Image (cartoon, rainbow, N blue to C red; front, top):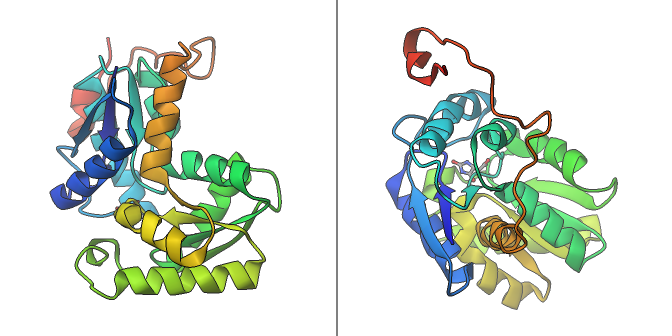
Length: 241
Ligand SMILES: O=C(O)C[C@H]1NC(=O)NC1=O
């Protein structure tokens, strides 16, 4: 099978990091191709960024509608429902996959993410994905997304914050709240002694599992393909006949 992993931001080095994590998690019969959108923000750290990332995500699906499944590798799960209307195979967001995985290996998890301003979005997603009380808290290290891979202290700061989160929230698992933290999971888990979930790996394996089960998004109603419509201006290319 072939899984297309979409980095919703336009930073190639993050796409490479995401691809490495997805490939490490995928099984032997799964080809993983990570892709950087042709348009969008360099990183996603606000609602504005998230909104402007969606056209590039949808373009990346339209340009390769033949993949068996798709991963949206940004913790805000931008455009997830729209992607499900377009994609032929199952689509998973990394926040969705990580939170479901965390809920299956503990009684309550904490999220460690980047900027404080994105904590509300993480809470909103938790309210959609897991039962009340399972997400015990969302904590921000306030390291900008694109500095995660360049700041030598970032990994230690994320692990220290995760340790604080476990104590403060009384949680027993950690969700890494940024695709840029994909390389942190193993070291953090070894140091903290609890499951630490990298959403890129979790989403890749979940999509792989859904495809293996022969499952794809239902097109019966809400996730049916979008109706034919014209779009104007910068969105002209998205017109559907
Ligand atoms: O939402 C965040 O804080 C992290 C999110 N932003 C980004 O560019 N990739 C991400 O995973």
